[in-house]
Every structure is written in structure tokens, then in C-alpha cells.
Figure (cartoon, rainbow, N blue to C red):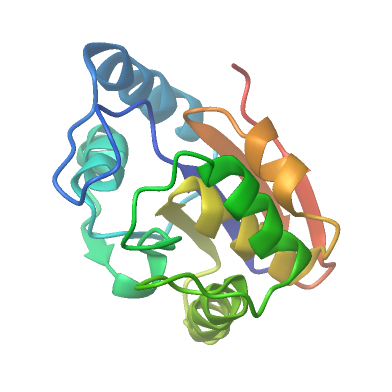
Length: 178
């Protein structure tokens, strides 16, 4: 049975592409590696953002697996502008999935990216796949399987977080023990 472990990255220093994990995030990545060892994993896919790669690196090294970077797992950009009311703008984007702010990506576009990735890994031969992404895109990956995932669920995510998805059943279960 195809199983996907959807992982949100550990605590980071910020949002830019090259933002590293904090010292706490590095410790979380080591805990995540220990946590994931109990699951059979055949492949690891990650956002190319530094914080996502650093999150899964300790686990990849323990398992002797390569990390396959995939741009489709990169974080959704709300806007090129820095909004002081960014949480409100983000909420609006979940209320209207087609809403696009200047230089940004709509949730509709992000969900299409997430769907493209999911459809790709479902066709892969590997049955147990770890997928590492970011808060907004993780929410959209989960929404692909369960459309109740939205704004409130995004803010309920922890750093890191892990959800187990049984693809054939369409079942989503939070398994991370924070």
C-alpha cells in the first residue's frame, strides 16, 4: 500500500530560500530522524529550501538514502510585498483559492503544484515515501487527500510535524509526537 509521510520542516531562522535551521531546529531534525526510523522508507523527496533539506538530512544519512529535491515542494509565496497584515491576507487566500497578491501564487496554483507532485509519487515504484515541505504547501498536500485542511489547520502545524497518508484509503493521520 502506498504510504506518504508528509513532513513540515523544523524551526528555522526565517522564510528566505537560504534560511537555516535554528539550534532548536537542528535538535528537532535529530529527533525527527529517530522518530522516522520506525517506519519503512524507500525514498525521500524534499523542497530545495535549505531548512527543508537540513530537516531531513539526519534521517537520510541514517537510512543511507539520497534526498531528491523537487521544486514543486517549495513554499507557496503569498506575495513579493511584505504585508503587515500577512495573516489576514493568508486567511483571505484560503477563503478564495484563486486570490493572487502581487508577485505571489494563489492557493489554487499551489494546490495544482501539490497535486502534480502527489500524482507523480503515486506512480513511483516506492511504496513508502517521505515528503518534506513547508507550512502552507504541507497544508495543501494534506488538502489533496482531505479538503477540510485549510487556514486553521495550517496554524495548528508544528515545526516539525509529520502526517501519515495511506493513499489508497485517502486516510490522513497526524503521527508526530511533539
